Image 1 (tube, one colour):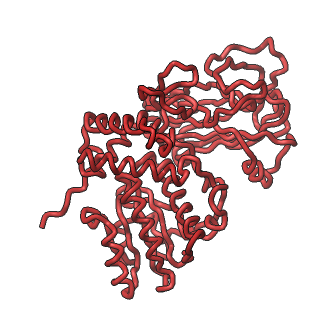
Image 2: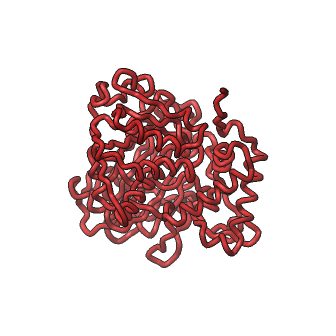
Image 3: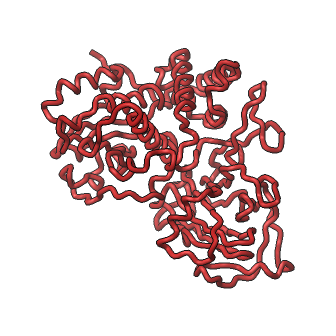
Length: 462
């Protein structure tokens, strides 16, 4: 018998995606719906052209099926508070256990989520809801980091006993992809499933639609390398990779959404005609679509500056370079007569002025190109910063963290890694996080405490 067809976004036409988008945007204007959908998801429907295609593919190119799936999905996201999730909104003990981790890629290049059943704890009632929230956190994190590309899941049963088998949790895990995250699964890899679980697995399998049975792969130590890249096969799977999960807060942080298009990643509720209202009232938005090798900077939070104004594009300055006490390359701004205009600089929350704040462009064929990012402290006290990237294997950031003294600048160098050309990093993002601190010098061991405070963030996309 011919296997059911698994459609992909390449099978969806622009016209089909646009029809679904318009149908969705019209539906969310209804009084009985608009309060159950987060504005960020409405904005994403307008600015992320692949999102609607993913729903269409997941719905087997059936418009009504795709629409119902999309509506159920965004209502679930709103109810779970997905768009507002942070590490602090999830029970911290779940991160340290290591039952859910992200590591390596499969043979198709899809990022891998690992569920280690031996480390999982069965829970009930309210605590089960918190575990469910933790699961959604990791799925959303992968969705953002991979820009909506497919991922694979390894159900690692190698060291699990029957007491570790939590069918309700596995059902929730599978339903996340079946009901709420469209066209996201590449493979479900079941590793070393004990024979005693055969009956239980038949139940699990029925949770998936028949077409999804094609993506279920059973593996053991002798053949898992046919599914996972050999360099990513862990020792416990019979490979040589010695990686083990260690909780590091910064590695578990939820990245900003790469799907929101208007500048500043600003989320505004739609007006009656379905147009997105921008911060200047113009009613227009600029899609966040890579043009060549551009870096788009935008504030994630619309936080008032010290003067009470909202973050806005303002002129930057330049001055002679000196060294400050933090050890980072810094510039003295005391001589205001030396300043020059930079119309692209962006002021972030009354803390830093980032220049250039509009875009940085690498030549499309550039290899190991370098571009400076200037951070100017516009606060009376010191400001700590750190810069991260979704692709550390493609970029080098120097310095990646530090402190900007009052009235000083720090130059951060963004450089393509050896052998990487600009066109190979089109979809990646940078994240700049800034936070006010009390003392100017912060030793490395103390920096982690800074990021637990309320902070202001900005992000950029190549």
